[in-house]
Image (cartoon, rainbow, N blue to C red):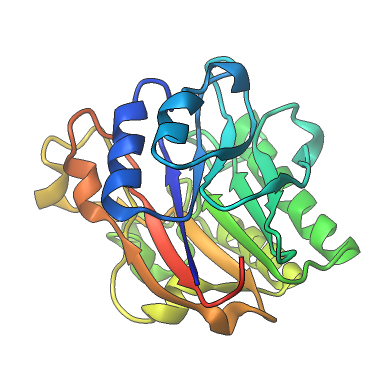
Length: 263
């Protein structure tokens, strides 16, 4: 069995101490980070290696985007895709010795206005998801896990108010439909909702909230999926809500799941 975590860290260099805290407290075998905001060579890998996370694959950019996979299990770089040809570091893949592929994805946030005719960023988000869908249709994944900040809360109980969020980027019907198309094309199963099928689940709370915990206006933007051939092996899903209250936190919290699979 191995345990995997995903976390939009919102600057791995600024919050390296929080990453170390998570690795020490929860000890996931694999940690996928998004929004690292760092060139690969400036990620503080020595700190993580000292905690037993000897392997890393990453793609980085100065000040923006960036994805990394830290592991205490042997992994090898399995490449990346530049979805929609944006030139962004938003995807990296790693292969475990068993052949299981881990995809770490950071979908564009999409800006503030859910209309691609007036908001280029929203169009980029939809194009990114369409390209993901087409890639899965062309080469349907097997024995794969996909995690990351997908920047969409697909279900009504994945947001604090479905009615009030319908025109807010991250929960609009067009985004939800695009995400569903990508999920269906790859045969992906939502492991978190497989484990916890009912009730509100959030992994993000805005920095703008004066008291995020009491207001609890959250969204489930961070996901763990697995292909249908291994989805039954996924279990023990959890969202570390308490991490939102750590000192100088990310606005996202870690999401974890375990898999009864050989590494």
